[in-house]
Image (tube, rainbow, N blue to C red; front, side, top):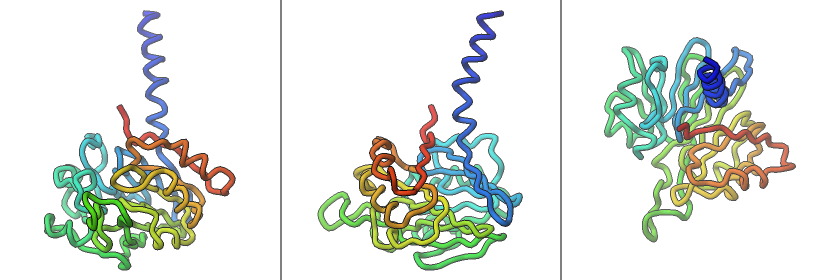
Length: 240
């Protein structure tokens, strides 16, 4: 009995950090809760509505609430997964994505860089996400300019930024009044932690959270932002 009790306590101790990953942002319209799921997949809950961004395997979706809205940033399989979208959808679920996703998912509604949509108290802005120098061969890019969307989500006066797959672009550095920023970093697809930190220093969100960081040294990102006034929070996006 004692061994079982110890085992249960240890199990609870190890499980606790995963249960405490949800970030809560206070807004004038009520709290927004954002929970990391896996890699670039996240769950957003506010005002009785459920939003997912880039739900894709192997994110654990069983038991999660059905989606009112699903945002997709681009066509790569770690961001756009029709099976995961189908699993989370119910009658009335809306999908918003770049036009290249709509070509493969006809039920989605297209939004391109520079465009915005109002949705149930949210303002959804599509912002550029692209490579400046990295690609599969000279003159080609993993994420060409104009194809993919990052998103700025505004709710109750607070602005939340999901970078999608991008490098340290002029548009990213020029962002304003971001309260919470989810910033990608991993090579060769996006950028290293140093470049990500330099971008964050430029647009200076209140809080920066690395995501889509597989294989990256997050301590480099954290140290490079020391003394900047930007709070860095490290979350677990790759649960075992």
